Image 1 (cartoon, rainbow, N blue to C red):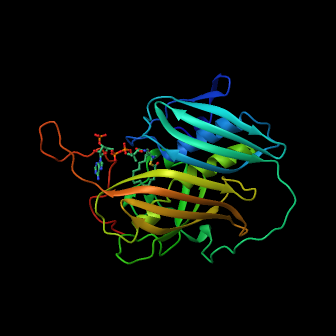
Image 2: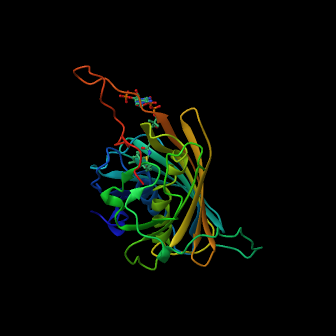
Length: 292
Ligand SMILES: CCCCCCCCCCCCCCCC(=O)SCCNC(=O)CCNC(=O)[C@H](O)C(C)(C)COP(=O)(O)OP(=O)(O)OC[C@H]1O[C@@H](n2cnc3c(N)ncnc32)[C@H](O)[C@@H]1OP(=O)(O)O
């Protein structure tokens, strides 16, 4: 299964045009974090490394087909002195569009919220589950180490908080390139977030997908070292759930913030060719409550 360096290894096939290869997946649609990470890398390759991404805002327009290549078209919206802005469209058909802003960094005030008090990752066992969804991680995520903060991983308890916290890191050393770590964080930021909205609800089958994604890079970090991903869902209504996340390093430094709205609508049976009404285009959904 392709690791992150292969996922981010893009061919430059034209001016400001980059192609990512197929990444085999057991899911019917391409993982959103992967598309966003590849689009971010495409944008970063049109800049020198004195600029680093400080935020991105994107929409997932259509499902991607994981077994086909994707082209990432970069538009240079503005080259300022301190800030530079790129828009990237990921195309099979247009499946994702994102605006990324880069900054050289300036001197200014400093403050941050405190990290929640949680057990250290070494005191928590590794888990192969996707919290809230009652299913194992897909093979393409197995390069990542994930440790759910004890007590957050039960799920499907009506009335329980729409909140989960997980320690996460890439399980192999990554190069000393800030752009690679930003892309890695972009990838992981979409891995578990929507699950925070799933937790308080019964294990009814739902269609789930990331609809939009906003990310801020606040302080330097490494994605091959432990990051605490603290996630909440303030609202779910009309088949959409709003989620927010904060990422801290082990020193308690707030390194990133995330916001996402996700599709979370009740899955309705779709007619099959023989009309028995059992098929669904949705990816595998939990049929039974998570046994934990
Ligand atoms: C790879 C990740 C998978 C994640 C599965 C979650 C599993 C557990 C994962 C854990 C957590 C992971 C988290 C990863 C998160 C991402 O990575 S998700 C991947 C990235 N995001 C995406 O791919 C979303 C891309 N965007 C879209 O697909 C489209 O914009 C949307 C959201 C479907 C809306 O487009 P639309 O044209 O307005 O769609 P709409 O007409 O509402 O419906 C589309 C089809 O669904 C049918 N439909 C409508 N309502 C329903 C319903 N309630 N029930 C059933 N079918 C319905 C329609 O009839 C239509 O069918 P067709 O006519 O195509 O046959």
